[in-house]
Amino acid sequence: MPSQLGKVIPYQGRRFKPLDFVRVDEKTSPNGQMNLFDSRGQEETTLLPISDNSFDLALKLDLRNDPGAERFYLRSIEKNENIAHAYCNLGVLAAHKENMIEAVDYFTKALAEDPRHVETHFNLANVFFAVGNHHLAIFHYRLVNRIAPDFADGYFNLGLTLLETEDLINARDAFIQYQKLSPLLKSEQVTTILKSLASLI
Image (cartoon, rainbow, N blue to C red; front, side):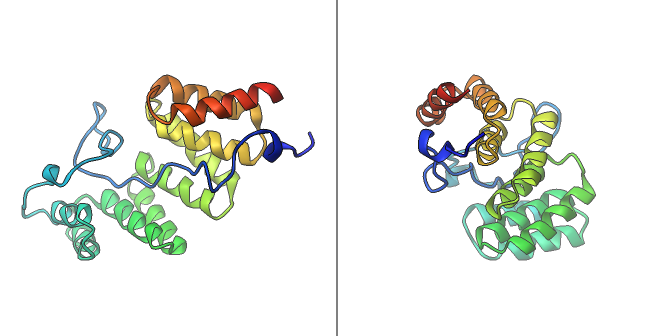
């Protein structure tokens, strides 16, 4: 099909960006998977108390944007504490510094520890989106959808990535699923995209 996507859909990378990287915290979902999916907008009052666990200390520093977090995540790995989670959060720190090579290195180490680590697959997909490898991004977003089907952000980012590859039908389906899971979040821009897609499909 002709590439008129940019003309018809009001989608520009600078306007609708993928939802950001997620760090792992100590919250657990019903299936036991560590996650940060419901902690958007956390305030400092929710920081974990000081403990002997290096991961806890690293997370406390990380939530305060303290550069010492990296040292404690590495110490957590050395002490065999929360290894996959620590690698994942190190990857997020690297990605926020735009060091994507280091981010991928940490994320793949996290997956070596736990191949079904949801946050890591989501973060790795975000890296691939950022560097323009949309097919690998789609692969990892789809894994997120398979492992954690109620994680709305995975569908939103998948929809944006499918728009990049002009897979309009699957992009529409991803945005519809996103709206079902989180009708109050980003509903205006998703509605705008869906209306434009309806005129093309």
